[in-house]
Length: 78
Image (cartoon, rainbow, N blue to C red; front, side, top):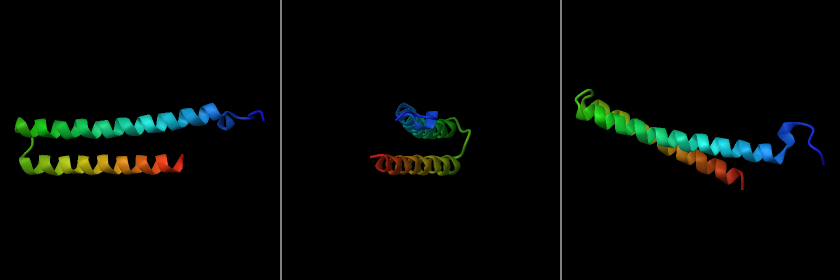
């Protein structure tokens, strides 16, 4: 069967999946980078320990949420 639109192309569907997973991987990595920046901000006394800890915990929560979402998506595509 010939595709009538690009959305019907298998190669486009696979590329879309790759881009989605790549973006989520970058997002997880970004959480680690931001978390590290909060350690540095605390080290140079730009943020107090309580604020830095609270923000690092928020980064960890987001990273875990992204990982769970990625796992959910992977299960749906098998």
